[in-house]
Structures are given as C-alpha cells and as structure tokens.
Length: 389
Ligand code: TYD
Ligand code: MG
Image (tube, rainbow, N blue to C red; front, side, top):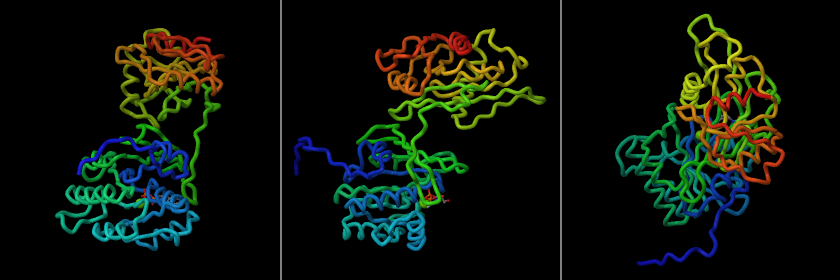
C-alpha cells in the first residue's frame, strides 16, 4: 500500500494538563508515539507517571498501567497516598510482554505506561529481563503496538549510577522521545528534562517538588537570591530550555593547611574544573586582594556562571545587581552564547542593572531598557568589570 504525505490538517496532541510536562513534550503527547522516561531509582518516575495517567484518564484519555516493578497493592497504595482514585485506572501486571500487549489490544487505552522496560520479559527471546536482548525485544514489540494501534506508550527506564540507561543505548534511538527525571535525593526538587524528541524541542525543562502527597509542579524564582550581595556570589543568566533564569553561584575561598582542594556542588564538575583552570591561567594579574597565591578559588561552569571566584578571593562582593552572560574559551576569550535576547530580558525582569556580555553579543533594543550592557572580549576584561563599581 502506498500513502501520500499530505500534512495532517491539525496536529493532534494529548495534553496532560500539567503545563511543564506539556511544554517539555512540545505541546503534549503525540498519539502513537513512544516516550522513554529515564531516571535513577527513587527519583519519582512511577509517581510522576501515575499522576499523569490519572490526570489523562480524568480528561477522557484512558490509560493502562503495566507494572512489573510493583504489585497491584503497592501501586494502589501509592495512588491512595497521592490522593488519586485508583479505581478509575486500569492495571495489568507488567512482567510478561505477551500479557501487556494482549491487555493493551483489548483495552485500547490512549496511553500505555510500562514500569519498567527492565522488568518486562518476552518469552520468545533469550536472556534475563533488563539484559540487552530482552530490553530490545520488548521495546520493539511495544513500539509496534504503539504504531499499529495509535497507542501512546510511556516506558520507564532506570539509569545506572554512571548516568547510563541500563540496557542498550539503542533503546534511546528506537523511541520517539527521551525525557529524563532528575533530582537530588536530599531535596524535594525534581527536574524533567526533554532530550531527544522527534516531535518537540530538546532541552526544555519542567520543575517539580516531591511532597508527602506526590509531585507538584513548581516554578523557579526569576529573581536572584539575597545572597547576591555577599562576597563570593555572582549572578549568571542561564538557559533552561528556551527560558532564561538568573542563577546565583556562590564560592568560598579559605586558606588550607594541606593541599588545596576544589569542591563543587550543583554544577557539572568537569566544566567547573575546566573553567577554574582557564581562570587560573588566563585571568591576568591584579584582582586577587587577599588569600595566598595559588589557593584554590572557586570558579564556575556553564555559560554565565563563572565570575564569583575573584570576589570570594578578594573577600568583597561584586557591585550589586550585576549579571554575567558568556562562555569562556580555553584561551580566556569570552564568547557569545545562544539566547542573548531571552537572557537579557530575564536579567531586566530580575531587576539587574548591569550585565556583562561577551563581545559580539547581539543586544536587542527594547526589552533591555534600564540595563547597562557592557561587553567583554576576554576573561581579564570580564573580571575587571566584575569588580568595578
Ligand atoms: P517513586 O515514584 O517510587 O520513584 P521511582 O519510580 O523513580 O523509583 O518514588 C520515589 C520516592 O519518592 C520514594 O522513595 C518516596 C518518595 N515519595 C514521596 O516523597 N511522596 C510521595 O507522595 C510518593 C508517592 C513518593
Ligand atoms: Mg518506580
């Protein structure tokens, strides 16, 4: 059979009613798509998909939950805990691929949730559940099910401590979209990040808080914290998806008796160490007012978050209401970063007065009124500006 590729009159999306989730997906789930939700054990993947399944079912999109991770009673207990009427949700034990596919064909849900791809087993394939062969065979069968029946399939996948998806990486290529759910076990904050997406944006982000009664969507503050007035604190304007946010980065420099060490929390340590090395070599003289030479000072990673080391070492705060936008190259030159317009308008909304940007940044007129935008071509210039009133 040969088909014509006429565009659909109107692209249809299944909206979850959770604004952040719909934004990360690019407007909701595409019918018949297969979405992988990856995350470390304990981040709240099962909770998120249970809450989404309940919201979707309530909105007239019936969902079928297949759990190989937990027994029906455990899923029911979670539903009770988060205040969901479990009796409205369809459930099938999810250890056997055959059972799950058969139930989905019979029930014809809009959305099938499989928790998890590592616990489901295809009796026609060799190997143990979670192994490469099983994960691939089960994913293939579920992708076929999605495409043939127009059922949206949501697969939960565990990632290892190293951050890799347990089972084959080919799974990421086979599915239509990969979302990751991340969170720090010590805090309630959770972040849903859009990765590969055939039908939507990449890198879009939604924030949640894990409460005693499930996940609640949360919005990050668009104003820098009050710590911005302290020594060792600077505000970078970073992109999270298409949105720009002011982020306070803090550094503390202390004399050390033993060999100096750099500790990082909340930043990518690899990028941090690169920027710290670049700063140590390329900063030029003249800014360190206190602290012994060669003492470890904290510098930053990620665009626009690398200017607080000098302030911490000098023991005095940078002038207030100042933000930074740029990327530091290994040579110490400061380069423009994408999203300058969004970042500058976020800086203006956050009440910043001065923003130091990379030379060559396209500064839009209009929305940035009230901001003083200063260009820096090199780390040296940026650092000088950083500490100049
Ligand atoms: P869970 O969804 O089981 O995580 P995953 O499927 O990713 O392994 O939930 C993980 C943790 O969240 C669990 O340790 C307990 C906590 N939690 C809450 O704090 N509040 C809640 O309402 C629920 C359901 C779980
Ligand atoms: Mg789980």
